[in-house]
Length: 90
Figure 1: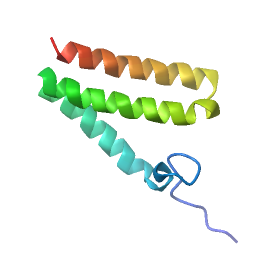
Figure 2: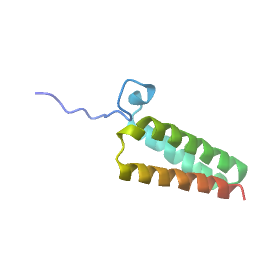
Figure 3: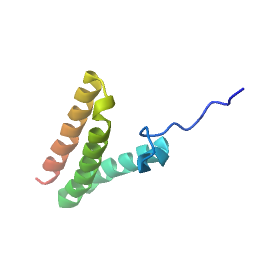
């Protein structure tokens, strides 16, 4: 009898993101977002920009695996993060 795997990979495959635990990735994203919003100004925009770049990398790496609705949702989320980064500059 096999025991269920409790840790599923963040991204399928053998790349570096396959070894990252999903809770750790979530906490990093949450920390970047909260710090980016709370810091404000150019520093906050920079943190949100880093978050947006990470989202672009993940989106590009998983694009072919996503359904149309998942793509729309993730592109919308990316637009929100970019919009917040721009707003932080004002």
